[in-house]
Image 1 (cartoon, protein in one colour):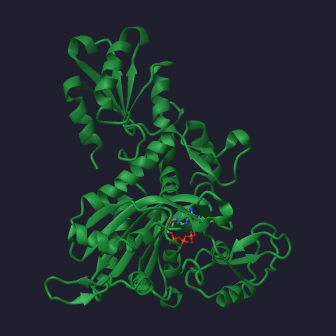
Image 2 (tube, rainbow, N blue to C red):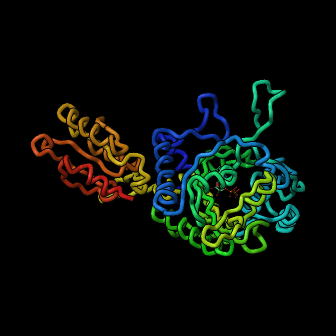
Image 3 (cartoon, rainbow, N blue to C red):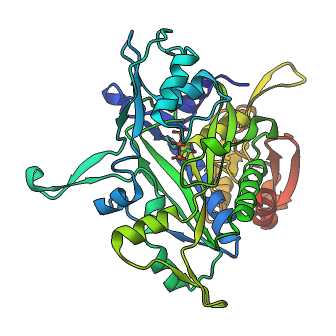
Amino acid sequence: MVTLDKIVQFAKSTGFIYQGSELYGGLANTWDYGPLGSLLKKNVKDAWIQKFQRETEYNVLVDTSILLNTEVWKASGHLGGFSDPLTECKACNQRYRADQLIESFDSNVNADGWSTDQMYDYILEHKVKCPNCGAHDFLPIRKFNMMFETHQGVVKEQADQIYLRPETAQGIFINFKNIQRTTRKKVPFGICQVGKSFRNEITPGNFVFRTREFEQMEMEFFVKPGTELEWFSYWKAFCMDWLLQLGLSAKHLTFDDHKPEALSHYSNATTDIKFEFPWGSDELWGIASRTNFDLNAHQVASSQNLEYLDPETNEKYLPFVIEPSVGVERLILAFLIDAYDEETLESGDIRQVLRLHPKLAPYKVAILPLVKKLHAEKAKEIHKLLSKYFDVVYDETQNIGKRYRRQDAIGTYLCVTVDHDTESLESVTVRNRDTMAQERIQISDLRNYIEEKINY
Ligand code: ATP
């Protein structure tokens, strides 16, 4: 498997991901997505929306606010009891989130849902080592709230303190009634959302795996109580299929079903999809059956009835919910890791090729004039034609072999070359990134041809 350093270097040199604020010496653990990275991000989000919302009969999409009334966070438990467990190495003063420290010590352990006492006992009993200095001594666990604070209003002293959301889910729960009423959806149905979340993580790191600003893709799927475990299995399989369809390797993916004693108090089933990252197996996607915990909490705190009236049975109830929640950047890292390849050709040359699924490839097509002086005009015409439908790139510098290699390395799925026969035959050659095979295609068939090849 490719190393993390290699991926970081590759992402930077090709224009996928740069260090944030680099010009000013950087801002730790922030990352900027360049021309390729922003397209990859867009494609990951599109692929998720396509399969989780557009192509299902059940789901709708929303886009709720990052800033919410503070009462929401009191009701959800984010302000108060739910703060994260912080510990500190006595020798080097490095701070850790206790559950993450335990899980990085032994990736077979899942500390979600453990009490602080359980975590501290584990750290002492198993002589957990500080990843920074190797010492075994840690301070007792304290609670630390990871929500970013800010102020609403012009004069800071008088302004109300508010928070940046640490997850997108609460925006969905507090709109449950609005959405159900306006869409007239019947249970079971789901609400999907893609958006930024913020957590003042104690130990961000591993490139874009854990950052303080990130994007989540979350679905809250509302079901009749009693049917939740069937739906939990359904979405569990659905999430895994989605990853496999998009080209992640089955041997790098596992389910980590939480044992009953490790479940959060409101959950009756939880699993993580774990991916084999270069540093070990780690959480990619959390999927939880959350009962009616969230709707109930908001119903109590807002004194509003959030029950659903079943039109067939006239029963009133608070639906139970299944929540698959995944981070866009973690997915991007996994896709880059599995797609990165250095292939040895028959000639002995090494070909760097990014085997991203065509749906995810930043550019679907590169348009290349064989000889700039002779073919640029026609190539630009084709570029204009195709750019209406696809993300395409035009490249006329250096010889054609080098240009093919450059496109292979950034994952461009097809190369369209305009050559000596293009004018007379109204056709171009199309080269496939993975097989390197070339075909002659009529310009008038090009759009359909590409569409078929990248169909997802
Ligand atoms: P972890 O234990 O890795 O911090 P979590 O269990 O706190 O994750 P959830 O609250 O379940 O995470 O969030 C759901 C998903 O959001 C995670 O599976 C992950 O893909 C993504 N995610 C959470 N925190 C971060 C972060 N700081 N940076 C990037 N992605 C994140």
